[in-house]
Image 1 (cartoon, rainbow, N blue to C red):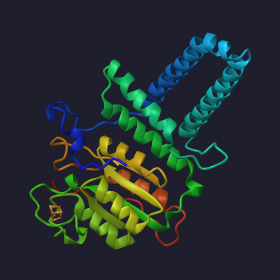
Image 2: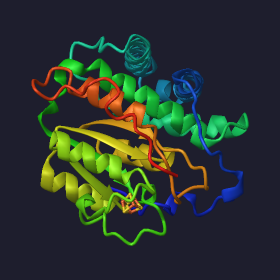
Image 3: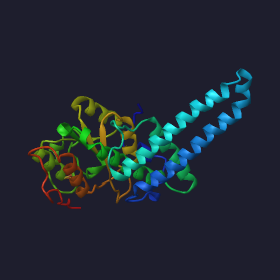
Image 4: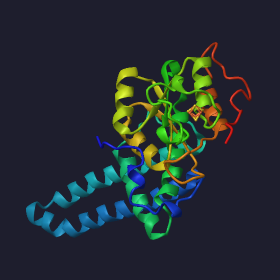
Length: 287
Ligand code: SF4
C-alpha cells in the first residue's frame, strides 16, 4: 500500500489554480470511464487480431480458442460495467453479491484521468465524480452495511491552522472556540459515541482502522486523498465527503455539515436509539 501524508498530493500543483469547491455529478466519471472501457476493449481486440497469424502458426485452432476466451472476458467486463452503472444510477446493488471497488474500477479510474487530461478536465473534477460514484455504490449495498462501528476520519487541515490544540491525539482537546468545525464534530462524538479521528495521512489512518476495526467509514478529505483512501481500504465500505478549500488546499478547509448530517442519518437509519434528528447538525462554525 502507498504511504502518504496529507498535502503530498498537492505538492506539484500551482495552488492558485485550484478550485475552492468542486461539485461534479456522477455522470462525469461514468462518461469518461465508458470511453476508457471502449478504448481498452478496442486495444485488447486489436492485439488479438494482430497476433492471430502468430497464433495460427502455433496451432490451427488457437486463434479461435483465444478469441473465444477474450470474447467471454470482454463480455463479462462489459456486463459488469453496465451493472455498476445501473447500480450507481439507481443507488441499488443490482449484483447478486456485495460489489467492491476492485482493480477493474481502479484501472478505469486511472484511464479516465488520462482521457480527462486530453479534454482539459482536471483530475480533481474526475476524482470528485468518482467519489460520488463510490458513495452511490456503498449506498446501494445498504443491507450489507454494518453500522455498529462507524468511524469518522477528518483531515488535519480542517482544524484552524493557528490553533495549537492537539486534536490529532484526541478531538476532546478542542477548546470549542468555534474558529473551526472541529467543535461540531466533537459534540457529534459526545452525543452519539462515535469514533472520530483527525489524521495526518494514510499511514496513521491505516493504524487507526487497524486498531478500531470499523465496519463502515465516513471520510472527509480533498478529492485526491479520498481517492487514495477509497482505493487503499477496499474491504471496508467508505463514504467520502469532499471538503472545500476557501483558502487553498491544506489550510482551514471546510465541510458541508448538512451532507455529514445526511450521511450519518443514512448510516444510522436502522440503528435503534441513535437516529439523528432533523437539523441537529446544521449549526455552522464561526469563521
Ligand atoms: S474549534 Fe477552536 S479550539 Fe477547537 S480545534 Fe478549532 S480552532 Fe482549535
